[in-house]
Amino acid sequence: MTLHVGICGAGIGGVLAAIAIARAGAQVTVLEAAAELGEIGAGIQMTPNAARLLKKYGVDKAIGENLVSFEELNMRRKDGTPVGYTPISRVENALGQPWWLVHRHHLHTGLVDVARASGCTILTASRVTSLDYQSSHDGKVTVSTEAGAQHTFDLLVGADGVNSVVRKAIFPSIAPAPPTGNCAYRAIVPYAEIRKHAELRPLVEKLTMEVWMGHDAYIISYPISAGKDFNMVLSHHRDPPVHQVQEIDMQELRDEYKDFDPRIKKIVDMIPSAQRWPLLYVGPLESWCSPKKNVVLIGVSPACILFSHILKTFSLTMPTQDAAHAMTNHMAQGAATSMEDGAFLATCLKHHIQSPTSLPLADALSVYEQGRMPKAALKQQVSFMNGAIWHLPDGPAQQARDRAMSPELKNEPLLRSPNLYGDPRTVLEVYGYDAEAHAEEEVAAFLKKPGMMDRKTGVEKVQADKVMNWFLDDEQKFRPKL
Image 1 (cartoon, rainbow, N blue to C red):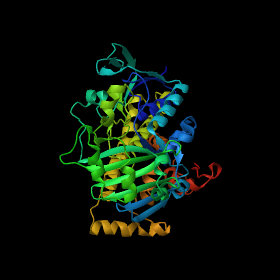
Image 2 (image 1 turned 45 degrees about the vertical axis):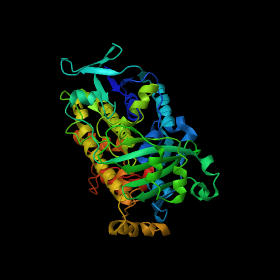
Image 3 (image 1 turned 90 degrees about the vertical axis):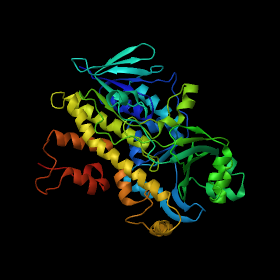
Image 4 (image 1 turned 60 degrees about the horizontal axis):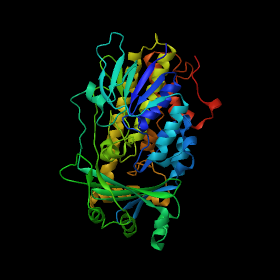
């Protein structure tokens, strides 16, 4: 019998989940509230843990040249003084995966193309208004839409954003909130405009990521759209915390960064318009599943509320969604974490589909929860910490941070660094993560499968994958011998 999975929300996480679950052998229907598909917004990082999934499912081929590679990360004080440096090839070579930059629209279009090619049904103008997941004797979930349609699924996946209808139905007391007064502006300026100014050309003569760190404010920039556009995220704080997107006076934005490096300040002054986006937070939750294990949440990216008013006007897909674990954007892990959720969940469902008696659906979802919830909570914490590092005020802590990073300016690799985008431990733990391999380990452990330890050497496969197998070819990898 075919497992019919419904996915509420056709954002980045929802569509990646649809692809992975369909490839696992399920029938997939995606219900999207918007009248037409097409994300708006700005740039997004596909760090190696997310790039791995784009490659696995062929989404990278669908996006093509709009997946931009870049050469280096430069960490600066707000006045432009260099304090840290990471050659991106070092991260990519260590992890065996690329680190890409992309416009959300190009990413989403590629995902949708691959989802449809994988047999997924995507229904637009299908805003979910209610769900019945408790009354059915066979465990099925019935979903009603604003248009009056009803759909019945064996499993419903909630990927419908920080204001998730699905999350509200199973956890009505949970509400998103700003954990601090941290907000962000997003903006794009064409490289062609920047190159008109001789003093700015050193910033754009090659494709780089740049971070200017200041007290309670930073700017991060990187190339998108085949290297044609200079994307910026401009972090700042407001007291009291902001709960909704706000229109702003552009002079306010320009004044916010008046003491920054004159070069980036000149680019900031080129921004034609912007809004203030609050950074909202959800979780950690006690569970991501309904009691009957027939509804499950996945996340997408932080602060999906930010463009909601624009999207209602244009009837487009929400650019960032997170039903389960909204997090701040400081480690670029919101969308990546949601993509991991979908891939991990799909791996668990694959084992259920292949052997329903060995791994019932409820158990498959338990494996998903137990494996993914701690990982998402860790990423929320790492994102908070990186924001704290970048937002330090001038003084002893900032000076200690800069000293600890300074060997990077001589291209000296460090065992630890406050530059978390290049810190070996953080890179391995966050950017080196393989969601599908982790899911296979968790399923094997749950099923108590033999063969995880080599009887002769005592080496466990999980540890071999971390310590040995990363530098070996497939035919050389350590595999336990019973």
